[in-house]
Image 1 (cartoon, rainbow, N blue to C red):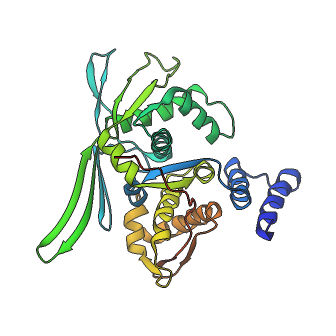
Image 2 (image 1 turned 60 degrees about the vertical axis):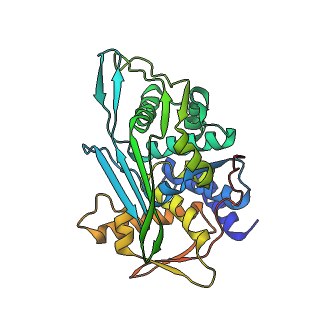
Length: 323
């Protein structure tokens, strides 16, 4: 075992046992233990995120807006909040935009199940409960916890997603490819009549064929241990997925500088006029991400973030469907 692996393991044990030290939070302990495991052991489970959502992101927090758009270089994500039929009220109701870490975690889970089973039809009821249990260190989710995840699943299921990417620039003009779709094509809606009623997962969720086809060809493998360790923070999940997609594409002899202005545009939701505060939050979050991605090579500077060619967190690539 390498020295840094030993140190992380020993630090975790010391913090747990020494009553004189300030007890760590559950998040801090999870970051330390996952970081040690990632350095010591090969991954047993692989998660996946769509490459467009590695370069752009959903809202961090709940918002009254009905349309959300983020741009990163050649890639643009446009999300329009949807409406769902409430059978009890016998009418369609507005559903908010998907937001926060839970929306990202659900999407990663759906992506992973679809790729693992090579099918857009996903058995949700058992797999989602097991996934949430894994995120909570083996603890069974409570009714309110399941409800928060299911609300985000509903928001993702009825939202309209537009993915656009500039593919070519020539003297004749600029070409772009756009996909208009919904991530989920079909799932069971169920609205409890009161807040104390048990919340049920839908039995199955079916991804739209358009989204599934692009996912199969453009999925980025992630270490599931890192996803779980960073599951408390939407920004941390976005930074981790972005680095997983970006660092392995940098030329070994040519570093890439990403200016603070560009980082602010990509990750600075809520810091519109406070870029200095954004830098502080970003760098603190980045430090947590780097604990879970030890192969990442980068350097913060006054100008921005200098990215260096790095091994991806997962070397295995997603299986391609046969034509």
